[in-house]
Length: 78
Length: 353
Ligand code: FES
Image 1 (cartoon, chains in turn brown, cyan):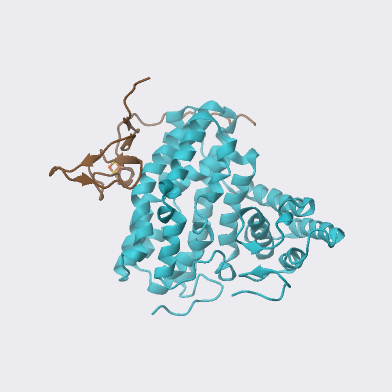
Image 2 (image 1 turned 90 degrees about the vertical axis):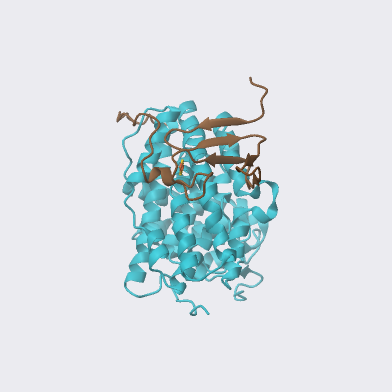
């Protein structure tokens, strides 16, 4: 297990999710307020609230991973 | 808004038929007063369920179910707290739930199920939400709604949103490991991350007050149609029954996936109508919050749950499809009313200032 306290996770076809102890700083060195402990950073480039993701990547069908192979399986009964 | 008709009972709303009327009478008494009367009530509910034309929009039974769940949430009807686990009331609740769940399972079309891997489940949930062709309430609010219609939306939403997240929190102890951690990560944010003023239900209450609305829970129950109560009841049913933990997880995933973009439209609609930050903060907050939540809900919550318990895969997709279907039914009701120039509420509210 890594001892680092911050993780950045790329989510398929979506943002980078950042967890842990971090500051986001703008190009002038000012800390960007982050109201929540887990944030999603836009990596598709079209969010209206950059650097955060606003879900718009779905509208442009932003793709980082191969599309889902359609494989129908019967749901096992519980 | 308080009623005095039911003895000691304090309620912000009225009954809608014989069963909910009897339930008010029962809740105004003490559980030891007339046990036979409560048993008769449970049987009468069973009969009413059997003869209901459509349980999903049955005003009397959906209100009764809403009141019965209210005993577990609190803040719906003030009554003797021992009623919560009264066996006859639980029996009544279960007979409404059984028929309601059956109706939902009959009506809701499941998508082709993916393999139970985290990546595939997340991708299939996003696909399901993207392919949803429900009516676009948020676009209407953004572009066309009048002030009265925008306020009606907030009133309709208040039945759930003043208890936002509570419906899904029931699932926390029913999950384990990765899916539990994911649900807690989302819910902690819903509950303000330790800051009471940032609890989402509280931010919504501020929006209501900024619109001169009453933010007391249940203040507008009398004004909302059965389908609005059904939408809240469906979440409570999925959340409170451990057996349905797959469905409440799928519901949350679909709910979060259909939230960030619509909330941007809602915020824009209220701004177009001239409302300020005090009104739009709730919607703006959800643009950013739910863009995070939808990722966690799809991959870490639903995806991990399916990986750990492949037997829940079907219910995860049932819950997600049910969320989208219910949103569609509610959206059609609202847009249908507004497009014919009438209120979506049972009585129109006074025009906004
Ligand atoms: S990654 Fe979500 S809006 Fe860009």
